[in-house]
Image 1: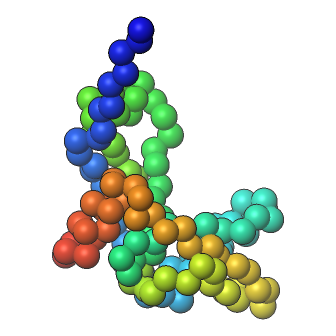
Image 2 (image 1 turned 60 degrees about the vertical axis):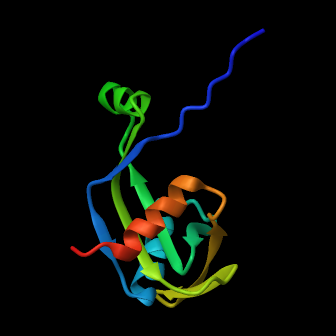
Length: 122
């Protein structure tokens, strides 16, 4: 029988953190979706009063090696403090958009990240 091992990340390293005001955060998210011209609904993570989006590095041999050692690198994290709503309406350049919030409370990495963001002082 095969042996299965669970090896969670032991460290998350964030290289840039930006806290935005609520309107700026949701407009940023909407602008990113609009720039990609994919026409989908934007989705951000939310937990314990914080909406956030993480930017990951393009996979490389170095980043894969770091992941295998249990270290996860995020290029950036943008976040704002806000109450949970399943969907936010955003107006950008005269057009209305929707941004969905995903409750990320079941992801231990995101729970730890939000705890860190709440105490972070740049």
